[in-house]
Length: 275
Ligand SMILES: [Zn+2]
Ligand SMILES: [Zn+2]
Image (tube, rainbow, N blue to C red; front, side, top):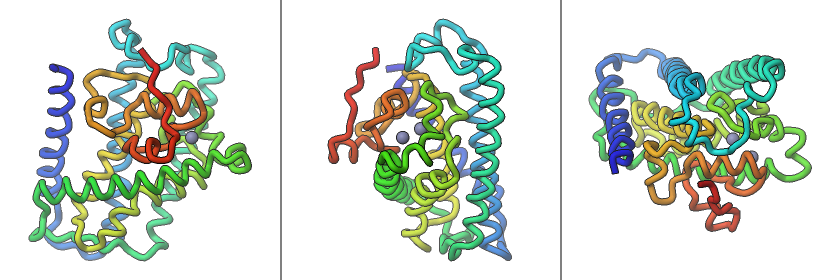
C-alpha cells in the first residue's frame, strides 16, 4: 500500500509541479513558433533523459542487496560481465543517443510545423492535460506496436532492430540505443503522432508533459529493475519494466509500449513469470 501511494504521489507531483513550472517560465510572446517548439522539445527530452538515467544510476552504483532483489533478470549487469566490452558499449550507446537526438531535431525542421497552441491565455486545465495525454499515449502505442512488430520480421531484424536488442539485460541508457531508422520509425513518429493529430486542440505545455512522461516510462521499462514503488505496476493495462524486460530477454512478444492492450488483442503477450 505504501509503495502504491509513493507511485501515485510521484505521478501527481510531476504533473502538478512540472505544469506550474512551465506556466511560470512560459514567454508571453513567441516570435518563431517552430524554432521555439524544436528548442523546448530538445531541452525537455535531454533534461528528462539525464535526470531519469541519473536516478537509476544511483541504484546501479549502490549495488545494494535491498535494491538488487528487485532486479528483473538474474544475469550480471553489462559492467559486471566484461569491463572492457562495457567501456566500448557505453561509448557506442552515447554516440547513438547523440546521433538519434540530432536526427530527430533535424526531422522536426523539415516536416510541416506542429499546430499546437502556444499562448498563455489558453493554458490547459489538468483535465484537458490528462485527456490529451491519454489520446497521445494511445496513438503512440498503436503505431509503436506495429512498427516494432514489423522490425522483428526476419528480413528487417538483423539489419535494424538487432542494434537495440544488443542489450539482453536492459539498463536505463539502453532506451534510446537504436538504429537511426528504428529511432525515427518506432520512436519519433509514434511519439509525435498524437500531438500532430490533435493540431491546435492541444497546448504545447501538454505535449511537453506527455513527452516527459513517455520518456521517463520508456527509461523505466529499460532500467532492469521491477521496483514496487513504480506506479506502472498498479495501473490496469499499463506496461511496466517486466513487460519490456521480458521482450528483451525473450526477443519475442510484448511489442507494446504503453499498454498491454494491443499485445492482448493481437495474441503477442508473454505471461509474466518473474518472481
Ligand atoms: Zn524488439
Ligand atoms: Zn527496448
